[in-house]
Image 1 (cartoon, rainbow over the protein chains, first blue to last red):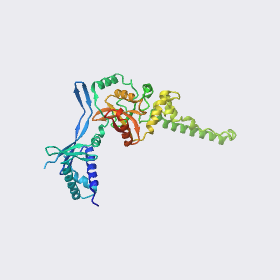
Image 2: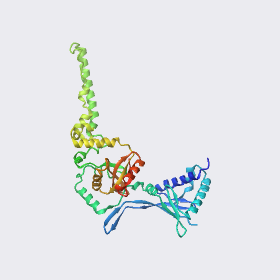
Image 3: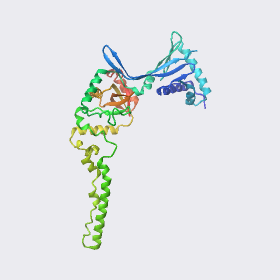
Image 4: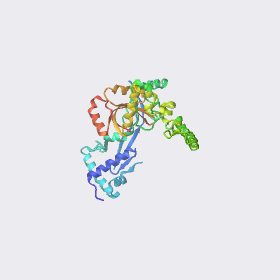
Length: 67
Length: 311
């Protein structure tokens, strides 16, 4: 079990975050903050030009850790 | 409830939790230090920066946004009035466009598989496309009867053979040596495919289907489409140029792309209980190839065009 390099550690952090967020799970990174996914269901937007059905979307959100 | 990244990171790196904690602490400290003066971009994740009030900000990378929207890729807003109109038209004339099965068909809108694809076809294909892609998994009536016929035929053949044998033994000169008795089993039990042709054209093989007789242009089109579908590997890629909640609207859009792409498909999928019909153009062996094609045609395609797997 060798010590991972900085690049390996960074790649692992990114991979873990991507995997967890794709499953819509929140992940807390100590000292940094919490990543989570906000789901926006499909909705109808009404404007002067008419109504449009907006498809559902997921958005990645981040809440920084406060000291 | 948020879970800590530490055990996941330790598992990924195959190190102890303590080692993972130490690594993470170092990296976070570096990140915060750099973010205080500049943007820190992590490929595949996003960009960290410090707001004027000192709080850490994060902007997700486009690839991450796409990753978490895998279920919704290729969906774009559409005018509600238009879809209602087209859906209403479909309700009035459910078979007007037979190129796409109705929502209760096995491979259409109700299919939970987001990549259940429906080939967009030329209007003159419509009359011949009504049944062939809705083959019931149950055997048809003629197929179910065939084993019964075979049993009776075999029994009859055995009786006839026994009678013939008895005649041959009792009267050796009755039959000539050069004319053995024909096997009645063959003639008394018709081949199942022959029976299918007569009784269930929809379940017959393509070359026996009445709608696929030689010279029928629509059958040729359907056969080529079927062959193309069966030859398609389970995972290919396309570019989604539009999406609609109405099939007819999606087919109209698909037709507008037919002159520019060899392959144009309407792919039905259910997202959050809503059926969307994506218009997918092109066909590529891998996501990078689809991405390259999208980049090349970017100026002529909608800005929200996506690459999309065809499963």
